Image (cartoon, rainbow, N blue to C red):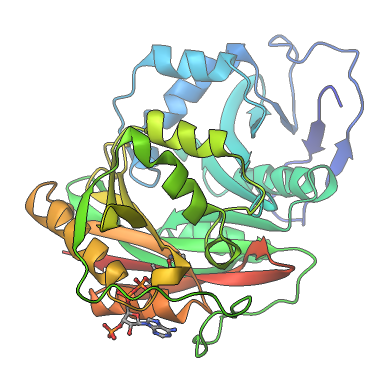
Length: 388
Ligand SMILES: CC(C)(COP(=O)(O)OP(=O)(O)OC[C@H]1O[C@@H](n2cnc3c(N)ncnc32)[C@H](O)[C@@H]1OP(=O)(O)O)[C@@H](O)C(=O)NCCC(=O)NCCS
């Protein structure tokens, strides 16, 4: 596929008929001189940067999105000019001017690469003319017919009734509300997570988890009673002990890890930490038995928040190691980083994890249906958060 052109007649009174022509194009991508009575949805072109800059720097747009309205033009120019294989970017053009932009980002990690995340933005003076709907239809067409995605997600500021309604009309359901996940225009903002499923049974919610996650078989339980437990930051020579935890099938089942992963991945994680990450390990008599990480978001409108992940070696489950790691990381979050919000995703059948998180004040904000594939089945995840 070279280019995808989707032409949509702009008629607010009629339901849109979508014509998609996924064929190599022989005509130029853009001709500024031609008069276009219709709306054309097409891939982004580097020349669109100026029009897109005008849209995204409008404060009315910025407040409902997650950027600040004072982005520099050069950032947008670079973004428009640099294609990214995971990000599919389309624009809506009318009479030679870009009046809307939307994108779909496919998750690249195995076990969640059936998910795409979309965002849609229309120039405020063109709101109410079904341009957002047209862009969304084109993006869903791409997700369904070309990428075979099963779950398309959109995060929308909770008071943006227009956008929520538009997505619901296209088959999205609200799965929950992330509280104070954004700061903008002088206040905390909540965001609704919406998702549209394809090829799955449609459900509005996940039932409350009651059972402990299934375990593969008996494994040795190593008691830590009377042994010395400490928590410290990760160190370079922790790689092989961490690798042993990450690829355990019992751990993979309730995380995004894979039993097939190679040690190079753990080395990469240890030696190339992403910006904003804080990682601790629990050590019993010099042996690493668990790890926890907190990743503070780098987006300025989300920098009050961080994502949390943790794992304990199965031989040591149920002995307070998770509790100890959580106490240490929350001390860091509250007393040193002054974070307002900590969040995480947890499989709905991970009873130990859910119990641990609730004990520390995390509450369920919603559930992501068919969120992860692993161990031969689909699982839903709760999204949970603790606010300070
Ligand atoms: C979730 C996990 C980190 C918990 O670690 P842990 O060291 O076993 O946790 P703790 O021993 O501190 O127990 C925490 C709470 O869970 C409870 N718990 C432990 N096992 C449980 C079980 N099988 N069912 C229900 N609750 C359980 C404990 O009783 C404790 O609650 P309490 O203090 O009210 O009694 C660990 O099970 C794990 O690594 N699982 C695999 C990876 C994973 O799921 N990570 C989290 C992904 S979101």
